[in-house]
Image 1 (tube, helix red, strand yellow):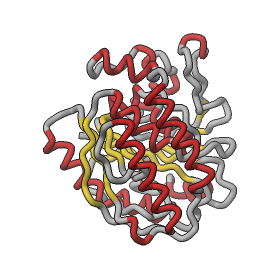
Image 2 (image 1 turned 45 degrees about the vertical axis):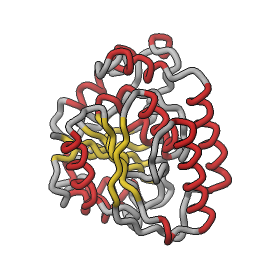
Image 3 (image 1 turned 180 degrees about the horizontal axis):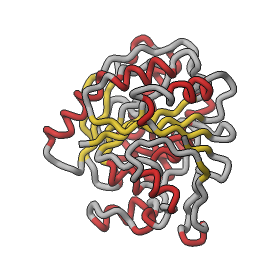
Image 4 (image 1 turned 90 degrees about the horizontal axis):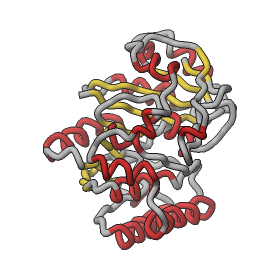
Length: 290
């Protein structure tokens, strides 16, 4: 079983090489997609150097021409992955990739394809505002969606690839986490949890005030507004990838998926948006694929 790992990177020159090295040591069949979100430090240069070496030659590298946010990185990555399961790996070393086998094993042992697995952190070492902001948002999500999760903003969310590729998420920044959860629950999936190790860094890019309100708005919009077209279609089709998403694949996109990890340098362009109502691609003609 192949596990797709999306690695969003923004100004992580001190840790990006280390996190990719750690991923290479995980005893799973990994498909790694690294998305540099317009870094202004040496992150992209380091990635270009790494891709000349084994085992990093098999990874796919994407560069946004400008900074768009973590949510935009995930949306870009989701259009390039092909794994049976999908998970996000932050590049700042807060999350240890050696936790991934435990989460994957829990998914396998569940024996139900309509399950997602979240890694639950010990948040006691986080700053007070960050810790209680996460607890508040998690409580809100549980009340609104009838779920029983303990860590809404965990990076480690193991999601079936079919579902992940079908979702049309809109959030550009950190509101992507509650949006993912809202989509998973509304698609009829059950969320399981497992404890993971966690080492919070002092300087976090997430702001409880700047990112908290959009996250709350996302939860309310998905709960009381009209469900996204992809969620509704996926639920109706019972696991069949919606034609909406299939139509978003370009020839360039398909060629990447069949190249078995070989390096490719080129430009992606998408079909006309008129063919995909509500779809806003993040891979523009300025996004570079390596």
